[in-house]
Length: 437
Image (cartoon, rainbow, N blue to C red; front, side, top):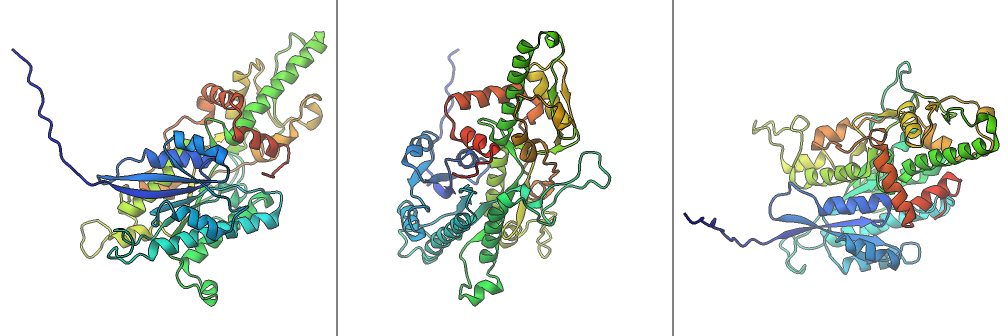
């Protein structure tokens, strides 16, 4: 018997691209967010995101284009916000989602504050254009007015530190926790809060005659992220590699100690909480917020019900309101401790004696600079709750924790380092105290 070919039915549909602008798309987090919006699934057919990346340097455009993000080259550090706005509007007049994830030089507080004001001016200019098209589409090339959803990146360091694992009264930082940031991230935090105030049309804004910002703002505070070029987890790998090299040198110089088991030493407490998340999982959380606000996909009906209809489906305005004007933390499904991470690093880098913690400074190897890694890496204890975004959007992280698959993370990091990753060099400089560009 001959086989019967299946019948293929072809239907013609009109695609409806949603526009997403990633400001700082060539950065470690920005590039991950760009990829996440490109692969976004579970959108009402036939919608998809057309992703644009705003970058400063022409040299970064090729990498964005290779990942199918449309590069827009313009710089707020050399051009006015209005000039950058026009460069962006040349690609699209309406914007569904705008993601802010820039990292300006943090060595000059005045310049950094100016940067965040310029970013806000850019967002306001784009929002004004996006919302000024008549609802009927007249004069807008067939497009209707769109109020952008602005996802403004800050960070969980805005809250400061929590206690150690096992400590009495230990609680995670939720979105309502008091703000107590280190000085190095204070300007970033203030810029994000300013965006919330502007979008909300606060009393101060009304005094200035600005009653409608034209966009909905969300502040996103992610915990440290790992994966690929590593971000600050890359510095953890560098720490172990440097300690291994120092131990090997000492072993050669001291024949008496050559048979002793090598130990990876840390001055920080073993119970220091290291709460992170893979950068891909973090980026997917941004998409989850946008998807929930735009389409009510993954929305937890326990948070906002249509009580009049009784059918458990919240009105669209209520769904977007559950996202707009809010702060959301992003963190892994559980935290790790320095004991877990340190033990994994010791095993990966051949420290047969394991890891040792709470080591005094005079017991650290003399030929090893350990101090630069302590404050922001191994000594910053913080537990962060991400239950709010999980309950509202259905987002969850799926990638292995850093200590669970450290070998693979090491391979990826070393490949990025060998390839001349800008992120690797930026983190290296910051670990040495250079927070410039």
